[in-house]
Length: 116
Image (cartoon, rainbow, N blue to C red; front, side, top):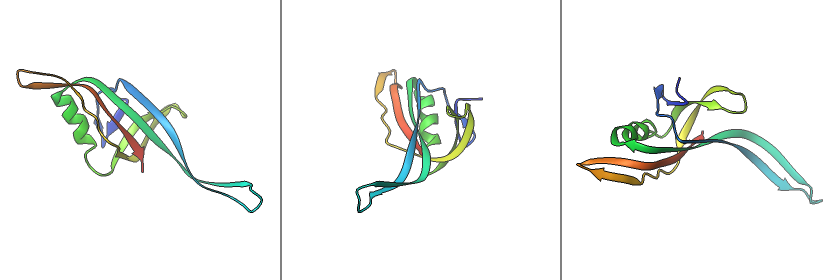
């Protein structure tokens, strides 16, 4: 099983894989200045980086996350198990490493995925 799969397609193992927990809250202070906070939901955000990808690998990764929303299966560190949830992709950075004989290679393909 891959560390990360999108819509059932296993992706290459990323060089950097960081899962963050994002609390969505409604917070305000009352008339006495006391903070009131309501936890609405906790969502996962995963920062991903792949290094030294071929054009075919970069295309596979970027095609998997091209749609607005997608299902991701990933290793969730809090439970120590794989979890599946619906995500969307953040901004993509794909700096080129080399372009030799008409073939592009990428140094650091980076983006994050955020739970819907």
